[in-house]
Amino acid sequence: MLEQERLSRIEGKLDKLAEAVVQLARMEERMVTLFNRMDKYEERQDRLERKIEGIEKDVQSSGFKVRFAERIFWIVVTGAVSSAFWLLKQ
Image (cartoon, rainbow, N blue to C red; front, side, top):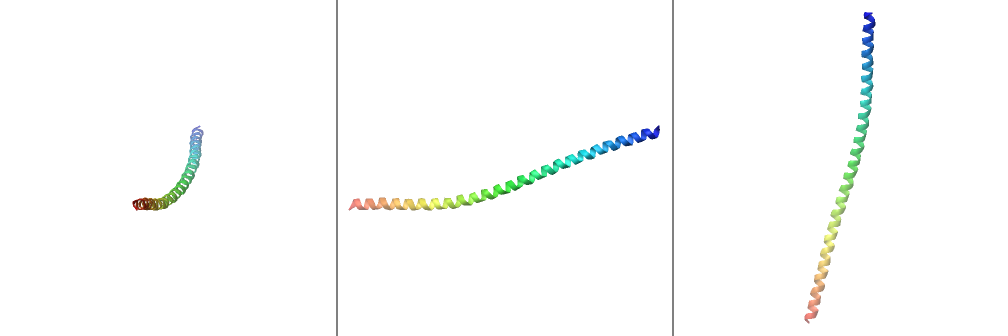
């Protein structure tokens, strides 16, 4: 009888241990899934950062072009107004 009780307790403990191992395996699967998601998010973030850096460079070069065009425009306008006044003065 004592041996039966002892075996029953050992079987119960083994069952609990088996459940714990199954739960650990499930948790490990979830963690692997989460790590894979995090890796994908990091890759997407890196791609977005590269795109943003490219856009920043494009905006800077466009800004230089716009400033240069604006200066040319004002030089032409100033020259035209000056020429008109000079012609009207004569």
